[in-house]
Length: 171
Image 1 (tube, rainbow, N blue to C red):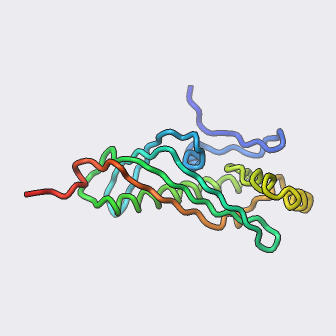
Image 2 (image 1 turned 90 degrees about the vertical axis):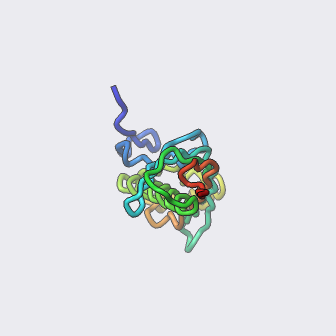
Image 3 (image 1 turned 180 degrees about the vertical axis):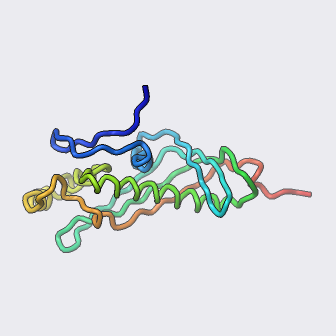
């Protein structure tokens, strides 16, 4: 037996199904994630990094009455495997871009089924219940979150242990 995805529920009703590959970004948005591998490919170079303990900050603002979210994720990790010489800075940048793409892709896949995968609506409810109620009444859909609600995603990756491959060589 294996798990091939997840069902999204809203108000005790099924709102959609997302396959495992569509949920890759969810691991970076859960503070419970202890450690997760990430395959980084950039210009033919491949590396595997293990990233851990995401620190997530989600900022809510309202623009013309609509909620907008800025997400900032910080991750620490180490290099598990690398195919060729690459600088630590380049690898951190590539890993950050890969994580950012996964977060955005998962959000967009959720929006296709009108599923709030990252529970952003709950943040609106907690921080501004009056606005949440107004938006909920005006919305004809199951969620008040839309594709345009995600304003920006910023990811910082710091590799603590890079291994022998990335250290400057002494001859």
